[in-house]
Length: 474
Image (cartoon, rainbow, N blue to C red):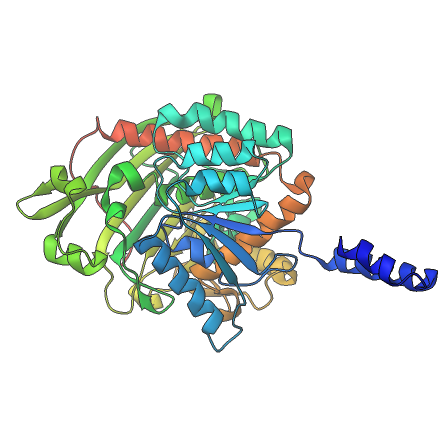
């Protein structure tokens, strides 16, 4: 309307000027953002971590659809802190849409083309499905499903996303951890690793022990967890949550760029679960709530919350026996933090990620030769592999530490867990802009991953009670 008024008011505007204006509009259109984010009910701090950086081609305005309350308030505080920081501040502009029907409003209004979800896991799959059907790309934090009864919805939704050309992607940050990337490179170097051992149910060839802590700092501030975080029907148990990353890493490391079939390639063998006990005083400290809410009364015993958040699962992946030990403790020792321990056993060497006091609790990569007879050959092979990796990882070196071989990683590659969210988001945006760039194995391997986590969780209810022993070196 404004354009037609200008044409009537200025009838003598030259054709050249008009063409110049059209050219300017075309140039502006080319530089306009092609992605606009919407955040749905941000109940977990991971939603804010996606916005810790700005992204080329992504509009600075983010529309947030959520109910008023603690979760929304904490999310806005975190994003505001990124905007206000002295070093490389972000420039996000948050548009808040709050009403009882916030999700339905988002689907009707659709001010953006990408929806970000991180928070309550119960009902998340239904929201992902509805978003895909509305033609929206979805970047959603794990876990997507908690129970096997939701597996069919996951499978059909991923198929529908493929068919309609939208991207439905979960945030697998651990693929961007430098120790995991280098561990994967060495496991897939036969001169270093040899042949993959199969192991057994009692002596697995792959083992991961992941210890997370309920009370921690995030972005330098205490991380108050919402009370619902301690409700397993909302958040899921250890294997549902952190275990999703571990299962993903095993698949990604053992069978890179290969599609897995959960019906033929995965066999869940055993599982068990046990609680972390949380006194009411500690619950107040970590949530800010004055007391246990009514929703948790059934799992409060003598004033202490029986929080079932720990799971041990053993399964076979294409015949390779894998054991995952997922643990939530209360608070890390001074100078420590979340701990990740992982090993893969080959015929020539075991490749380990360790986090010990000796290494100041930083994740470090070690190669342990299978015998003294092959040690010299393995050392030569590790040096050759690291030399070949210098193009991508300059400055990585190899040193002997007793019988072990240490792969030393420069600080420049230790960007930390929070920075991995921007790396995952960058990959996701690449797929949004070119759906063909998304690997064909992502969908079947996502199904295999959630088959392990849901089947293992349900099997743990039938398994022996009691905590599983930890074997990670301290």
